[in-house]
Length: 51
Image (cartoon, rainbow, N blue to C red; front, side, top):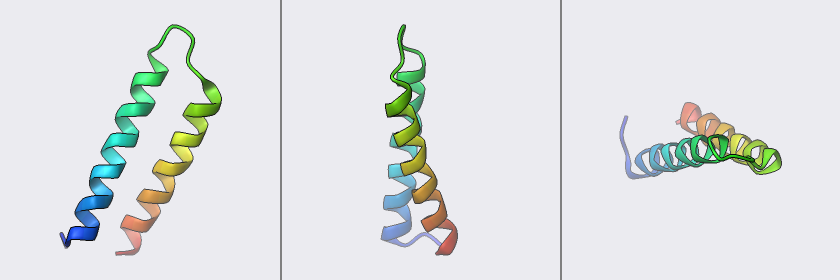
């Protein structure tokens, strides 16, 4: 099931995953930012599972 909305969510999920990874590998990662990005990623994943 790959409608345009689902594809958009997949892209958002990938972008969030990359941002989490990038922030985690910085010398002094911002833990609050990582936590917020993970929450956003979870919301996107939950929406994808509902489609």
